Image 1 (cartoon, rainbow, N blue to C red):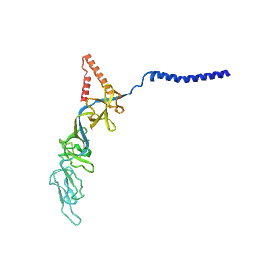
Image 2: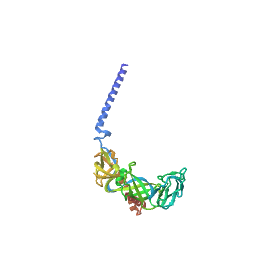
Image 3: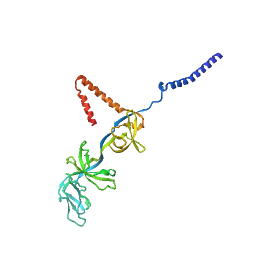
Image 4: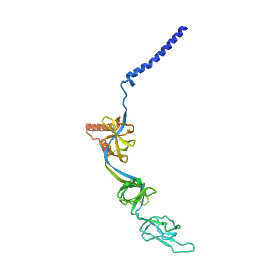
Length: 345
């Protein structure tokens, strides 16, 4: 019995010794070969980016606002005396001549009867609005009709105060309407209000259509794209390529050795996601514009846009080889090349 206990104790001690020695052997193996069994230090991180070349181009700034189509010459018609509106001889859309009677006012009061007072059209045109109904009581400050020359239509828009510096007569615009999707009508600014409305903080601008078009009617809701200033010969980059850090802007220039250099730049105007650079970068520089948020000066990058361009060129080369071997022209390949060239332009 004692011999049996002695053997059990010896076996237990041997097991403990073996377990204690195993971690030491693993550490030595790891120290000799490193992680994954390889010797050497840590590898540097490579960041995947997409790049683009900075280029010179002109940027056309514009404002997008809403407005209303109205007759260019519009006049409110007021009665000469207070009383009850007893009749209207002109209706909405009626054409009237200057001096024509368009309504009658009865100035009679209880206990006193007077002759009807006619309301005359002050100008020739079309009745565009009749704010009052027959039977309404009106005064000399109540408009009973609005007359306008609908042959000369204009668009009135309100421009926010922050954008009024670029306003002037002669600016061009494209006007569109929901009734005609995909169709634009050209217009030109012919009047700019000299005042800013103190309530809305806007300045009113009037545009005339360059050509008359029967599809345009007074009262229509208009969407106006007003072209303001042109920035010529500007070095431009995608706005998303610019990184802001402590009130300073930077771009990352991709070097030939697949590293990046951080360059401080000064921003100008931005139009449709393209930003003008006033200083800090010349044209023709390759800069990172996707994946820039994790970059720092000097890190290694992998430009996946360059790899994509190389892979796109391989099928074209293979197609050319097939054409040479067969002596036949592959029209599908030629069409694809034409579409790409047109897209680049």
